[in-house]
Amino acid sequence: MLNALTISREGDERGVVRAEGSLRRQGFIPVLRLAWPGGVVQGWTRGASGRPGSAHEDSVRIDNGCGCCVGPIWYRGQFGENALALLLEDLAFAADEAACGIDPLQLRGNFALFLQKGERVWLVNDSLGFQQVYIAADNRFFSTSWLAARAYAEDRGINASAAIEYVLQGASHSDDTVAPHVRKLPLAHAVDLRAGSIRRPAWATPWSSASGGEGARDGVSPGRFDSIDEAAEWIAEYLGVVFAEIAAAFPGRISAALSGGFDSRLIVAGLLSHGERPRLFVYGDPNSADVSIARQVARGEGLFLDEIDKVAINRQLPALNLEGLVESALFFDGLPNDGIDDPGADRKTRLAQNAEHRIAINGGGGEIFRNFFHLPDRCYRARELVRVFYRGFDATVLRDRAHLAAYEARLARSILSALGLQRPNHGGDDADDPRLSRAQVELAYPLFRCHYWMGMNNSLALRYGYFCTPLVDRQTMSAAAALPLRWKNAGVLEARVIARLNRGAAAHASAYGFSFTEGPHRRARLGETVTCMRPVFARPAINALHRRLRNGRPSPDLLRRYRDLLPGEWRLDPLLQLDRLTDPEALARALAV
Image 1 (cartoon, rainbow, N blue to C red):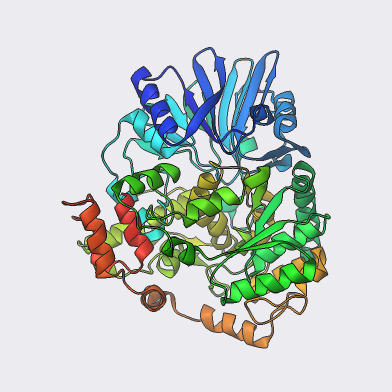
Image 2: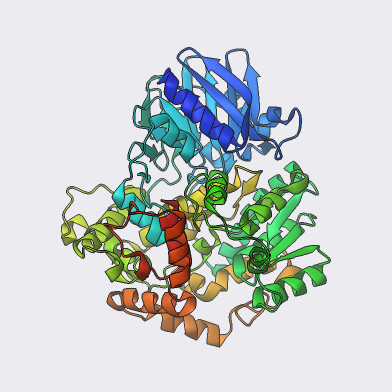
């Protein structure tokens, strides 16, 4: 399979050489080259991830065009090269060059897609941007690798605002990246590679009315559900189609993460409902609740379970020296969610989940079916969402307190941008931060949180094999945004969906103290109510306290070790007091920068 793409529109030749050198250092080899008048696309694979001749699964050529992609893609029920062939068949541009015959409701997967037909040449990613595409400042080089795009631009500086977001939140939550001359392809946009412009074609748009006050509802989903059972039935039926496509493309070759929560159980139930027997894996120590519950599910359903204690694995491995940090950074494309200080457990497990040419399925994004922000059923401003969820750190970590207001304003603008709302100015008054409808608040989770944070992790996973988060796409996202919040609270609806897909998988205990056939008990519902009652103004302090109690501060020994590895002033020292970060992973991200 293809694990990376680079596309050059007659750009800087020396920059292209630098980018290709970066990909080779990352362990990729070129296996595909497609040219069109004005540019070249190159496909890359990892030596261990593909098999001889497997690049054809992700590419197709026709008389007047071609296509290729990174990541699993389904279209009109077909997978891989068959899906690409159908896409090229349907691709027909109108006079405005933006309309075409592609049916977006039939396009699924996590991918970056190149299509050329006649004079039209496009680069687009999946509807929620889970395979990120990086763009050099000259608009002539594009890649699925941030390190490659950075090497092309020969960009040695840092974007301070994006770097702060990355350290504090695990990802830059905007279209900027830590490299000032490299940005991301915006959500629901595509690159017209002939013109060098970035547009919002209808077939790439993941929602139809996010800015209008009601959740978008597309195609096969009804305008509104009359009951929670009707909603659960529609979601189960739609996910059944999704899981049927996955099972048909990877029969007997599916691995899935399992924990004690809702979303991973929903994945297992969906696969079992189509006769698939996924190979399961669970992270945690042998005495953890997740491992105990995963054992019970696997034993009850007769599934293989691989128990992985990353902490124990890393204890047996030597701490990374500078050379080891470089290798880790190359593996993770420079800036992973958890930082680059991985002695080896994370790298080992990422490779293992795709062994034997399996696709790895993850329940990420399933919280669209629940109350992700744990907020009462009211309207909120974007800045309030920032304070609810993105202020779980000690504010004194910022050396200049004025940076806190800038940080909040920047994230709020990004939330509004993700929702398709235009801001008239860059001030901080209420007129510039309008109240969001409840449907828009719900859409902020997939369009903002999932797009930026999950998009980084999904992009890393696709570097080593097929990977998919099938619970959240344009259809489920649009349907879930319009659901009454009382159905989502405490997981009432999601529990019913799990039970409809497979009652056997649903009948086992969960980390919440109930089985999904029973649904949330009174105590769980009361707990949700109490959690939602926490006032917005107090959330930053509450969240910071919880993180401090859960993780503690990085040990002085860890900070000292990092300083010894990279002596001298760090890029972020003038901006952040690193000894005040609330968890070791944030410090590891600062090390990565």
